[in-house]
Length: 250
Picture 1: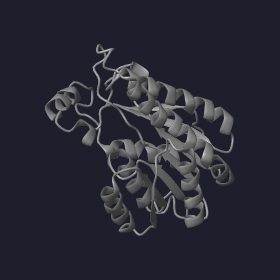
Picture 2: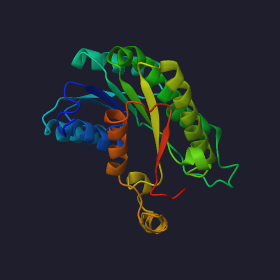
Picture 3: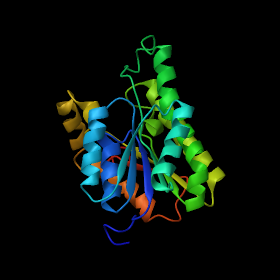
């Protein structure tokens, strides 16, 4: 595929697409000609700014506000995408939440934290995959789930977060079997990424990055390139989780 035309005429739905990794993926796919539906739950001004950046690339972009944990909202989002663009070819499940709780603070990991992280990071991801599947099947489309190395290592912002990402990786494998052969389902497991999630921890993050084989932490654009590769150049890859961590956890 030639850059700028590879995804022309396709529609990509990206959850949590207003900022960070989701925004970078939206822009990367838009550069290849895809029309974009950006889902967001709170960051309305960020969503409007992202829409403007996407449309400046010469493609169409629509916004949809709603929580992925709400199945009715998710089904409405997919219906909105079909109404707007006539199809859904790509689903990127990027929406995610966490609460920072030290792993040895067992009492600090409140039940509400568990409920929220599992509702969004696991159930929400599943809701989106289920709702989009009939449309993706028509188009022989694909799904990319943004998980985390926390789901592989058990490390991360909290025990609940790591558990949610491990579950998301498991759901990715299960859906890859269920949705084959028409729809491919893969996940990307980033390490630390330079987003607003790590604001205030810049020095700590820098030191962690310097300790990796590639000498830095990831940018949102690093993750976006891997997502594009799985979407456009990996027709025989499904059920896989690709780490994007600079070799931190080799």
